[in-house]
Length: 163
Image 1 (tube, rainbow, N blue to C red):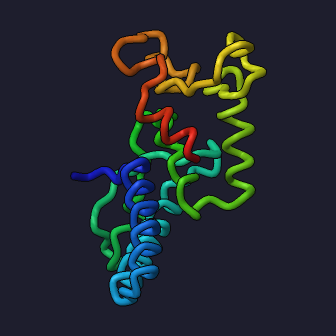
Image 2: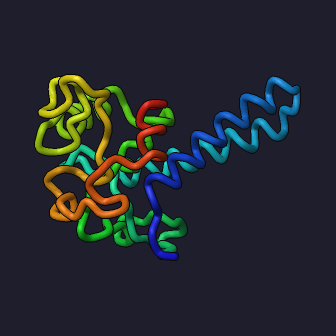
């Protein structure tokens, strides 16, 4: 496996945080610390997946760095093509993005009629509950509208609502 997936990494970070809270509530502090360390490591990995130019998180190819870690600068490459999907927003389930990054994702992607447009002011959303398509509207595969491409997909919509 040579790809670090934004969605999976974010879900593991969120799960680690939730399990750490449970362990702490049960008085199992050693496990809580271990889970918190795991959450922080996953949040650090997510930080490397942020693309400042696009204002979004994308999957990255990775290899073990010659500088001793899995995220060496020369080894960081976004998966090409960079395709915006709902999993690009899963880091919002964690404490990873800054408030500024969240605002940028909302403005550039979530409230943009040419991208995901999940607000009630979006075309066709006046009388419906806004839902998130499985790829951005500007992505050529959006028009496929087969299986999960284009239309909303239940698991992604659930996590969108949770965030």
